[in-house]
Length: 213
Ligand SMILES: N[C@@H](CCC(=O)N[C@@H](CS)C(=O)NCC(=O)O)C(=O)O
Image (cartoon, rainbow, N blue to C red):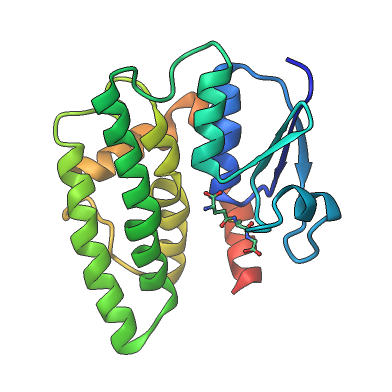
């Protein structure tokens, strides 16, 4: 369909979520890379409230916030469903994305970036929160069941980005011993051919993490 543009940033897990959703649906789009230290006037115009990537522009109408964009993509284009069809399952998928974004990823990022007592507290909190995801994956290959769905796409930060930061910082928060189901999901996810093609290269991620630090 004509007129699809994505304002993104290559190392942003949120941008990558949207790219994955577009690619899962087979939507052709123009990608516009943003420099987050010098945001373009167009990004500020299309996302004046948050001023963040990703922003999807469809037929000149902007949509911001990765979860909102992914739901829009799922409802607008044919192709494999990203959200479950069943209303209860859909609600639960939204619940887990909210949990990942507002609780889990926040605590995990804090665990990596704080030190001292604050860092220890964040590690403890992240460890507790990860147990919920571990339990959720008890009998499943993906959060979406047999196929990758909304929650898998949204857990990309924990599955890929966090692993690299953890390695760089020498942390042992997310390990096979403590979270076997979750780590199995990580293996399945990052080695899935479709996902692999849509993740930034590890070496480039290491460079950018070092530069941002
Ligand atoms: N809740 C937003 C988060 C997006 C976000 O944090 N984007 C970051 C890049 S990873 C950004 O644009 N940061 C620029 C800034 O904060 O100034 C979403 O889900 O889209």
